[in-house]
Image (cartoon, rainbow, N blue to C red; front, side):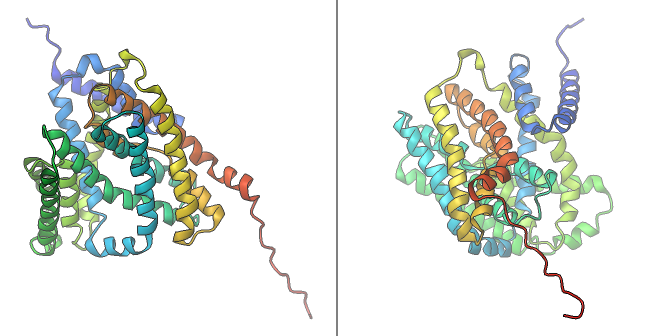
Length: 392
């Protein structure tokens, strides 16, 4: 009789934990991402080397970026870029560029500094979008700007991941290596666009002919995993490959047909990514680089508020709406976790602590965004309706 803990039992228990934490997150109104990472930290000694958890996490993150890519066909990308590019580039400079500079000043090497900049750069799309919906702010004037910034970051983040992945995989990295890396990214992107405009142009009609949902799931997830795997084969990140796979299918008329099939599998697998990330964080060594951590947390908030104050008016927002937008963009989450997965050692612990703290702080600032804007600019004056006097 063998007493080895069955992997099947472990998988079942993790799924039950995912259910409970998801339910708890709704009750206590916290991002479930944070709870999943904390669970991973708690379970680190038990499931740290679990190949099953690692593989499930890979599928989850691939499907997340695959569904994200579905939102971006070529025409939509062009339309978004025309309005948001000044604010988007400002965001890259403040959150990615300046943060990289701060990390360099604290003595980190260029790769580690760029990695910290990448972690700080992207606002959590899932947390921010959910808060906008839950708090009834979808109709606010600043919401379109917030969503446009999230979309811009969604486009930049996979490229940042691809660069970090390429740099971390090689022992030495020269300017020639960088040009080869950029060439691979451009080539993979160009191939995806060609396939989207040719092979997948009539993909919608083909999907309509498939009545059995099982075969449809195999086809769609197979496309996502294959293109993600192709990116890995080329020395790039599977995240970029999955995003481009989504872009290929974005050219079809109704992407809802694809989304409805893939969403359930993604929702099942994605929590395992955050749990697995948590298992890689060892808090036994204390808080690493505490001075840098505090500085980065403060700057990461300030950079997004500055983005709102400067970038909002560039997009056509009022000062009040711009400030609300800035304070609503401070939460970090899934993209930061993806980028932090490249880190090792103390930098991994540093990244995990930053993400958890930044998610909490971002939520609190989102809740207070309206009140802060009112304190700075005063409460908005409601326009009185002119009442017509009968006979006048």
